[in-house]
Image 1 (cartoon, rainbow, N blue to C red):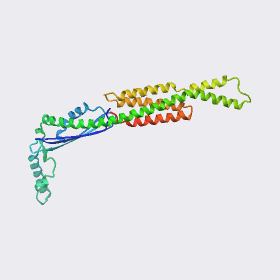
Image 2 (cartoon, one colour):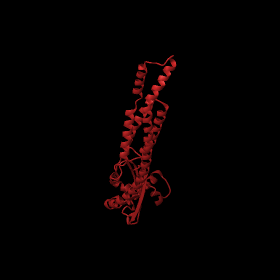
Image 3 (tube, rainbow, N blue to C red):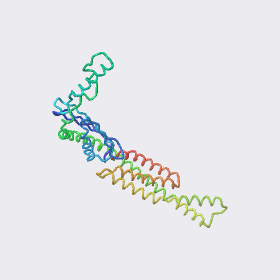
Image 4 (cartoon, rainbow, N blue to C red):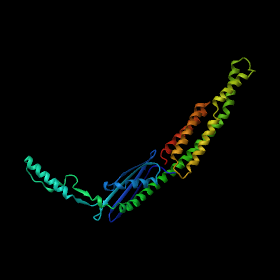
Length: 291
């Protein structure tokens, strides 16, 4: 079992520069990837997304890539002389037209846009990707190690809560079996107290008991809940991503628990049903972060 929360970082330095990659993830219904990287490498974003999708199935994944270029980097900055001259000539024309004084200095010109840009056409995408693929994969693997570690902790917690849930369900079954007999005794005693002599014809009482037994019968709900618990345990051990399936099973478990609570014939069964719902809610909080 994997959590959807994790973090991984990796870096590498070569002749083209230093690449630092940080990958983090949080819970999300589907796989969502957000990549932040230098603009001149944006053509590689689709490859990064494809790489992540082969290793992660759910979660919001944030990828941050920083590149510190070396002097030998193909993406080093160059002055755009054509743009510089064009700006200078236009500024001179404006000075003359408006009769403005002062000198146009290089510092003023360098404040203007598009005068220093990386040589995008010189970027060796295949070479950069060969380096970037390795460092992104390394960061991803570190993130997955963290997700797996947290996932195993969540699995152990869920297994313990399932044991507690099963104990409450066993108590409910026991109380339910005794409920009809207790109801018969209480009803018979009450009727006899109202009559001067014990009631000889108990047919009416038996009819009332039958109606009560039918309304309060939770055998089917208990059987289905036990089956859902068994299914949940089985899915905890699957190697594939099971978050969505576990969440669905949990919804069915909660439905049966609600029915048991609504049919509860006495406060003891009601109390156990509330405990069952409480454990289900705690498991629900955990399963929201399962991949």
